[in-house]
Length: 365
Image (cartoon, rainbow, N blue to C red; front, side, top):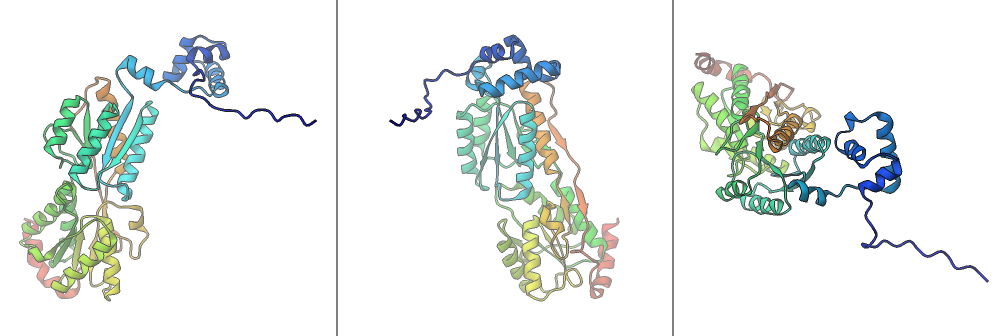
């Protein structure tokens, strides 16, 4: 008679959870030693760390985060709300943020608001209900309701990709306006006087608005004014960059330099320029902002502003960890940007050289 197969292993919520005492018994150490290995491994001798690590692995031990949170009043969880994870500039920052938080024993919860302040408010409410200890936001344009919600929650917050605090909210990032002023001055310096701009400027995107303002201020100092029809507002997509360029060059065929407030828009504009028969940069220069990975790979490579996204993410993590620990923290941290000149920008065509002389004289005052 055939023997019956062994019963299948089943999992039940009633099974006893492995405790820190069980790990200590298995490793032959005290519970205090296990606790030190989990929380401060650097102060424990390597041989003890190895014994505890083997015991943890063999018992499949996991920390009781909920129990620790009840004792400490903290969940060791940070929330982050970004406009979108579809742009590599935000994905890179979030990855660096998560890595640094993980090193400090924190978990990251991520939400995206799609450049919608109402959705951002909903995501914030959801994160607070989950007991986050701090939150990372993007930019300084947030609804009054969201600011009130954060104050009432009494948790630390930092906003990223901008360098100036708003409404008491600390910030870490770059000076977006200064970056495009420098980029515009560069284009003026190589002879351009006929400009156009493609900008992603919804109400929630103060970074892109500051970039557009930087362009306008640099041009105004050189005695050049952008007409409303020389500024095309667009969403952050390649298709929008293409259609915006087509509209811009149709209305102003004299333009020789197009400044875009994101690399995505600039890459779309370059694709449409090529389709319409423009030679970049021989007859038309195009620039972007962000320095996404694709910017250096397209033909010609894109002249742009490099944003230190990973450094912003790590800095935001350090800020919140210090704030939660009660350490001294600054109100803002301004990081350096870099202008990267590549093949998509070159000297203005000879027909504009004479026109640019006056603009250079005014700009150099």
